Amino acid sequence: MSDQMETAPGAGPDFDPAASSLNGEVDPAVMEELLGIRSSIDNFDATLVYLLAERFKATQRVGYLKARHKLPASDPGREAAQIQRLHRLAREAHLDPVFAEKFLNFIIDEVIRHHQAISESHATDDAAAPAPAHQGGQS
Ligand SMILES: O=C(O)C(=O)C[C@]1(C(=O)O)C=C[C@@H](O)C=C1
Image (cartoon, rainbow, N blue to C red):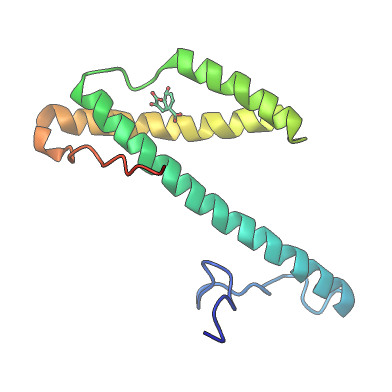
């Protein structure tokens, strides 16, 4: 119990949070401040990985649903609505909307590649599709 939550999620022997090319080049007080900020960055990056993993789990279910029902991998109308919404959210959050759009398009392109792969394997092997996942209800 005493040493719970001592380390950030994803910390491990493969990651040195103090790794830097600046070691020995910078005032130690500046380095300490930099490492403090970097520990927040490490937490954000870990969260991003978990968020992306959850998003891909959801889109994988869409991929199997589309393959089962022979629907096209991409849905340009949906994407246009997502991008419009993302622009608004980005502006509200003071994030560059152009960057937000590029980021979403980067992810969606990968999702579409996954959908196409699922559809191709589904065409040759229907058994490849897992049973639809439970919609574990959170009330
Ligand atoms: O919602 C869908 O139909 C999806 O396939 C998911 C998704 C996305 O990643 O958000 C991906 C491709 C489509 O063009 C639109 C949206």
